[in-house]
Structure formats: C-alpha cells, structure tokens
Image 1 (spheres, one colour):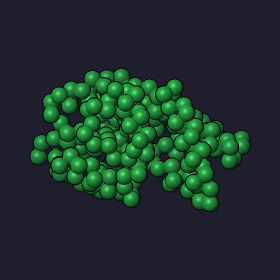
Image 2: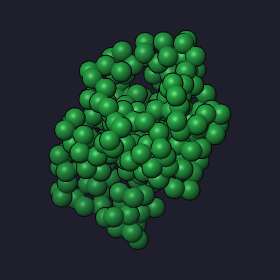
Image 3: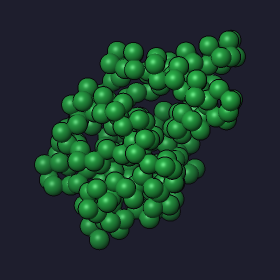
Length: 206
C-alpha cells in the first residue's frame, strides 16, 4: 500500500538536541561518578529511555539520577537545541500534502512538546507519543501501535523515521517500514547495523 502515515523520532531526527543531551548526561554523571565519564563515553547512552540507561548504571539511584538529568535538561533546553537544515520545510510540505504525521519518542510527552514548539513544528503533528504515554518504550512496538491508533492508520501504510537502533527495531517489531537519517550522531554505519531488511537510509536531507 501507499505510505500515508509517517512517524518520527524526535531527538536527533527532527530536532538537533544532541548537545543538550550530551551536556545533560555529563552533568548528571559528573555528580554521581566524578571524573569518570567524558564526552565520547556518553554517546552510547543516547537513544534508550533514561530509566534504561541509568538503571543499567545504578538501579538503586535511577529515580534520583533521572530527576537530576531532567532538571538540567529543562533548564538549558531552549539554549542548547538547534534546528536541522530543511526539516521544517520538509515537514511543512508533508503536512500540506496530507500525510498523517506523528512523533514517537522516549522523551516525556511535555518535554517533547517543548522541543516541537521551540522549532515551530508542533502544528504539523496530530499525535505525540512520549515515554509517559506507554508502558513499554521503543524498541517495543507499543508506542508505534498507539500512534497508529490515534492517527487511524495501519502498519502497512506507515513509515517510522529515526536516528537510532531502537527506532529501527521498533519499526520492525510493529511491522512498519523504516528509514534512518544519515545525520545520526552515532554515524550512518552504526545505524545500518540494526536496520531491518525493509529499511532505507535517508540522505543528507529528509
């Protein structure tokens, strides 16, 4: 069937939040593990939910660490996020041509809306599924299924676009086509390791 619905990851796909995320991790890790983590060490943490990341480091202090991260992240949000070139124009064009557009993210719903509003993208999306909207985050298919339900769409007419492995796997698990963005912070080759057979890589522009 023809693609009628496009679901997007948020961080690193629609919005350049890479520096915000890196700084938030470095701030948090320096508080709990002074001198132990450098910039390059936090790249593997980008993508999964905060509970998954911090839970793997210290299950007993995960709530405290998530709170520390989010406090810093919210305080520096507008200062550190950036727009990716051509994304606004592309999303506007897709919306104008009648595509059903949704965001599926491991970010909290309200924080995702902050980024969409700051980058002027919010009016184009009929659906935003955040971490607090589901029981099981990506790569579980639940967030994608929920977005498709809201958008009154089906897997065989949907595409999931993301910048990390959990986006590709979530798409595969939900039975939707997937596309990876070549500007992913971990690099195109890293992302291609995880792409399911039906995936494609989107070039330098969306």
